[in-house]
Length: 265
Image 1 (tube, rainbow, N blue to C red):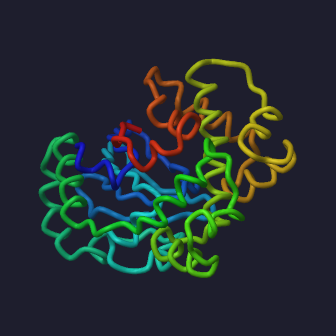
Image 2: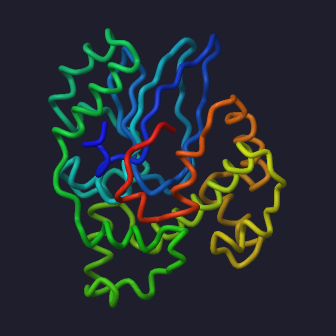
Image 3: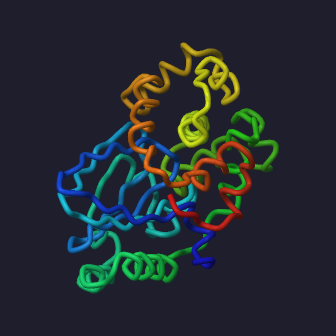
């Protein structure tokens, strides 16, 4: 849905087999609206550490990953009130209650389309300064937070306040999370391409001082070592699907995150 592009980086349908799944979520700078069909949609706020979400056996999930910086305008409240929260969507949007029954009776693709349409109708205007800050903090841009105030013609205090309101976290924490997502993208690419693992090189390429620095941040943000994360993605992504649309924006072009179309996860 092209009109969703300013809000979302990816959308997906996930169908679970005959065994329940405990799915790990790691910080990515945005938020997610997801619905196990038959249940009330939920909003997973911006994460600063890993969180697990149970999916019942036989369940079908439709989901939308929101871009960093759009959450505050979408929910009509400061995004930092939703950090590390997994809340019922009806606590945020009253109109969502009427949609729950429709989603439960629809096909997965129709349910996903209905959820996308709801978010487009609910969206407010994103903060343009924060949007530009996100672009500059993407791994491909290679910038830190020190030059942002001058670059964006705003004080450090004002940038931090606006970033917390729109994204949920300040610029430094957002930079840390997006840098980690740059590493995750390389892990996903290596799985898809079946290429050699080179954690030391990936650490430097994604902005870490060295592999030890990467390992510390990986434990902090994902609750796992880089090797454990690689094994997890290897198991989850070795399904024959092309995941390039999910990870290439983090590797090639940071501006895609703000201007590209939402893609299947």
